[in-house]
Length: 124
Image: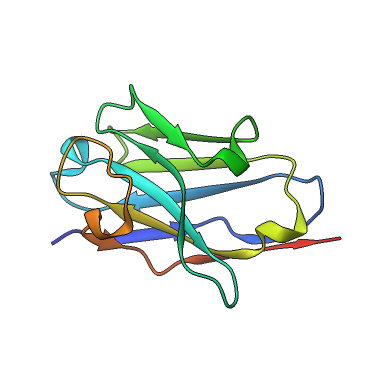
């Protein structure tokens, strides 16, 4: 079993930045691809950014490319999401998830363990 805990959400003005952090317990972290997803009110959960187990490969949703950066530190079982130039449409609950495989998964169902989510609110 893997426990995923995310933090770092909050309220920020449009154009501002936030950094989300995710800590996943367990010895398998270094062999697990990780991802950040978000769900806005009334919308489906969507992929934001994903990273493979080594950190050598990443993928971003088109809407966040160039503004968000995903990274990981396997020594600390931590995944980060640096979010810059935020806009109000990105107000959502952001979820961190772990996959029982080293390669990136592009679909929500490919992730096995989910955190509780952290609220990000971007005001205009």
